[in-house]
Image (cartoon, rainbow, N blue to C red; front, side, top):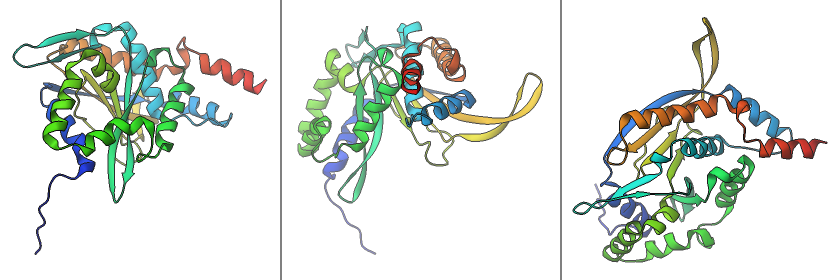
Length: 268
């Protein structure tokens, strides 16, 4: 048997610092089943116009609009001995993606600023751009590469300073985070967060439910939410989470139709 002991690989340093700071969060976990038939119909409409929209984009948009109705969740608490309660007046969405670095697969993130003002198509374009951008040379990953190149002790200090600055915290951590394992048969994911709210998307499955007194088989998207109990209470978190679910399940009834207008123009 061979046991190899080495220093923390550079590729793991940014995750290491994130998890150290995330330990301050007093996490509570919720989950809901989202009936996804309207989302599937919407995706087909886009596909007919040669536009591919991921479920992550729908979730980001639905959360962003829900925050407009529940601005109390757009907050953060940080600090132990002299804790600060920070409220934000802008909605920024953070999403995670996988990247290959050498022979390792790593998770990195990016922030879509003012996501509540972005169309669904624009949100998707941001995600696609980050997926295509090479980690080794991409401008958006420069700060992560620098953090990976620092000694752990120095990276810890710098990362903590960033999170202690409310402006930089919002720019790097966003108002919320969305992470997905929907491409795999994982039903529930409860992500660790440094935000007040964070969402995990599981794989969509066909499932029987009772609707209008009848049993039907429909598409169900498992959605989980992690929230920091220091910042918000369970009742508010549940009401907000239900608003996100409502936005997703009633997608065609929403009043934000920028992309639908664009599609109409394209097909005319």
